[in-house]
Length: 246
Image (cartoon, rainbow, N blue to C red; front, side, top):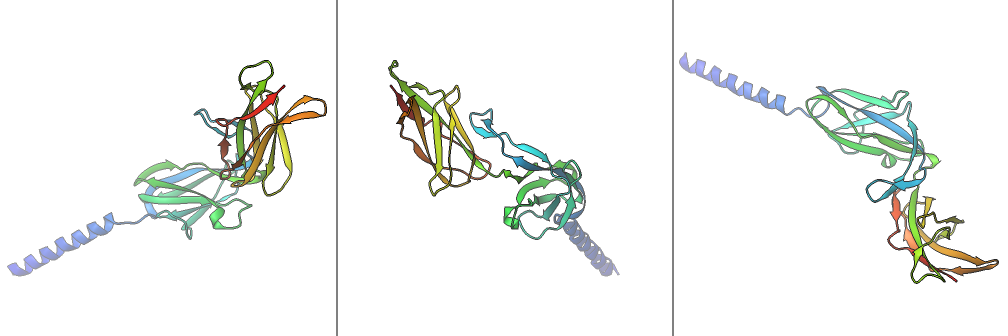
């Protein structure tokens, strides 16, 4: 009888251990008390190139809330078949509830995207309870969005100066190295020029020209640059174009 009781006690301990292990090994997904929420915005226009306040430059994008956009979630993170989806409200807000602790990826796809690879994905790790605000998702929807940009500078040597100084009002040109229209702009009071609506990951030639007389110009040597990914600004101000004005 005593042996029987011992066997039963051992079985109960083993069963308790198994149940405890099972309860601690629940994977990501439904059945918890946590929430993931956030906002989706549509980038209508990349806007002007401005300082980012940290020594670099960025686009001053014009955005609007992405209303009625489908947002997907993948339990465990990564990219693949979604486990759930919701639609954003009029403010571009979405919310996934009753989630367990773990890793998740959240993504949305713009109207101009042709595949899942072009979706915007964010990753987030959450605890067993509480509301977790995800990073904002920005979808490039406008015709002047998903562009790259460049900012550069011009130094000018005037006949009455001993050294190069800030080149103000200098005309600067840009042209895609594989063809396309030629565009131009003028430097500002700090000698800087900006080109904002460039193709990402493409090579451009940039040069400057100074109008010294009517129907006469001195052309300066420029440089070739390769733009970065969509939404980035290549900073060339440390390598100014130099022109001579006599």
